Image (spheres, rainbow, N blue to C red):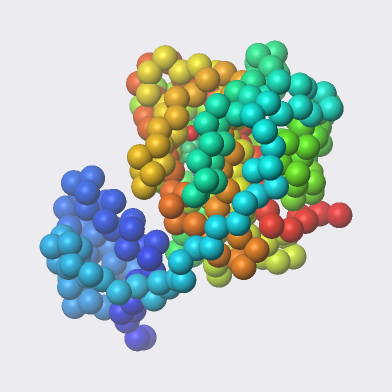
Length: 281
Ligand code: PD2
Ligand code: ZN
């Protein structure tokens, strides 16, 4: 079988981050060879990355074209029919990011946590190369999901998110709840799918994330955007909205983000991923 001798941008970034975290380069070369990469190509690629030399990738895409999402036209105090004091406390344009205070009430946060507590299981990730769903060491949290409109609380929150973002409920995936104990983290990743895994019959690409903080974390557990130098500390009831997909089907690589290890206390978040099109009728 012919050996692979090109890498994707995503794999290149993963190798770079892994090298930066101090992993032995030989181990990375071995892993590449096991995955079917040409041995000579694997060694050369790693040497070039260590020496900060250019490595061509197969999917060097055109520059991302920024389009403002519907939420961008809202002002600094946002009202929805059931909740009237969502406050925009930070706004970034490229990529488009909002930090929203008071999206959920303290009672809603507590109720979400108690509903999730009995159904937690180890979180999985989508492999950015293959699209496969799997358990990995880079995501050590536990989580669960609520079906769209599963109960009165979920429906109320989903209606609020739809009004806030101007994307109807059926563009939203099921709400995910994540729980991180001390030491747990979610390493740098993108929320969008690899292009080959975008399924037009299921709403297509993910274009935005709303990440809601359900408790205050004593230390650690920040959401960071390493390419932007942006770091957000969880505050109960607040949320960040970030947008990374445009109408041309492009995705914004500046949106890579992570959750740093919890140092003291625990961390609870709820994530709503929004897709370009309808997931259901
Ligand atoms: O818990 C977080 O801060 C976090 C960070 C990055 C959650 C997600 N990504 C996610 O759910 O995609
Ligand atoms: Zn994420």
